Image 1 (cartoon, rainbow, N blue to C red):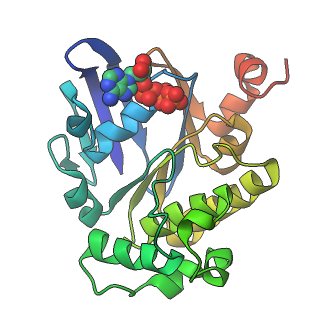
Image 2 (cartoon, helix red, strand yellow):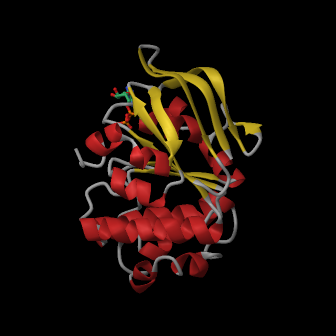
Length: 241
Ligand code: ATP
């Protein structure tokens, strides 16, 4: 579904953030990227969704293949129409608009379809949002705002969702709820996902494949069961040491 082949990424031609970076996301699977703050995980998502040029970032070498085509030079709104959507860190919803209007705006922006189509289907995954459809998005809890950010992406009927830190700042119970929804979307919609997450335990609960990123490079990769059995991962990521 997505192959990132040997890319080098710089910001402002100065700091090299990704160095010979390669990963792949198989169709229908959730792939997790784990690693310390600043390792370059968010930059991987920005490279894949076409956001780097907006931040003065550059892919120097290598290629990114989505659904069989190179997307190295493709702009974010065109990628969304092809089925690749990015749910960015920090959620970025329209705080002054209602929940429903956020979803209507996303329908039009991401698909070009008449505003409103597909919203009822998306609500089946997020009943909390349906209950709060007329509420201002800025008044939602952090977890509900994360749900809204995910719901907006789902409106595009994506093939691949890039999901950046869905657990950020959320209470453990809400993290469980969000990850249960992620698993259900993956299972029922057959959407592939590339997930950046600090909470390794939550990430492992929904993922099939994982990559550990350090200093702009993949240092370990494997199926989730292999990674869970790895002593370093148990010590440094699962707190079992
Ligand atoms: P985090 O979990 O904190 O988001 P990360 O692994 O996702 O970390 P990135 O956000 O990809 O890491 O950042 C990797 C490096 O690139 C960091 O050193 C960061 O300071 C730098 N960086 C990120 N964005 C920019 C930018 N727009 N301009 C310059 N440098 C940047």
